[in-house]
Image (cartoon, rainbow, N blue to C red; front, top):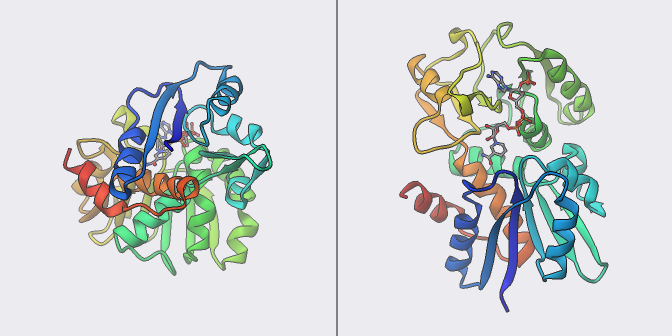
Amino acid sequence: MTIKLAVLGHPIRHSRSPDIHHAFAARLGLAVRYDAIDVPPGEFASQVAALQAEGYRGLNVTLPFKEEAFALADTHTDRALQAEAVNTLSYDASADHWVGDNTDGEGMVFDLTSLRGWRLAGARILVLGAGGAVRGVLGPLLAAQPQAVVVANRTVSKAENLVAAFATVAQEHGCTLNAGGFTDVQGHFDLIINGTSASLSAEVPPLPSAVIKPDTCIYDMMYGAEETAFNAWAAAAGARRRSDGLGMLIGQAAESFAQWTGQRPDVRGVLAQLRGQ
Ligand code: NDP
């Protein structure tokens, strides 16, 4: 029987999720239909109900519906509760309810550690941005037990609010967690993660370039055919190790796919396949 899955967003035209999930399914010999559905604002809940009636059992959720998906879910995983946003809905037919999860952070940590081989335990990490993506990844990032995390954002109060919300989690993992603005950033970082959407408009947050050292690992959550604006800037400042966020996208998709099908897909193979396209 074909497993019916979909991603809901607005806009959704450029989503790579159907390619990723179909590639997972092909490698595992599973019959999967994965649709990209453009949902007009205000119609998210009715669209989910219609898909449930049509036999869809797994849904990914992207901008701008992650908070609505959180509100719609009947139960939540711990990481969804931490993120206050849901990117994965799984229909539990026996209980007739939707389970909400957030796999973004797991996807990013998998990419950083398993695919890139970058060490997070004991690391000093600078995270740029304080929007939905950063909120989604902070829990799994702190769980990897870095020594220190600094969250810097254009609107400093948003970074401060995020840091306050995750203070206890940071403490549990023995990590110091601080907030600030871009121009205040100083010191040495092993890893800098760009979780702002500045690269979408080819902009770069105004960080002092002195924070970039040749051995600083650079990770931009954005991805594309060309090197992102942030990674190009970091390269010009001397950073040798850089990655975009395509591995994170495939990593989060793999977590969702495993929940829906009970089978763990080949992330490395699919990443190589998509990079080759
Ligand atoms: P949000 O709209 O929730 O947040 C945007 C963030 O970017 C805010 O912190 C905002 O600052 C900051 N920002 C926007 N424009 C600029 C600018 N010109 N200069 C500096 N800072 C800026 O977006 P998301 O958090 O959902 O997404 C952020 C990025 O992460 C996007 O590029 C998205 O594509 C990527 N992403 C990648 C994923 C993956 O799987 N690879 C998954 C999810 C997201 P302020 O608060 O001041 O407005």
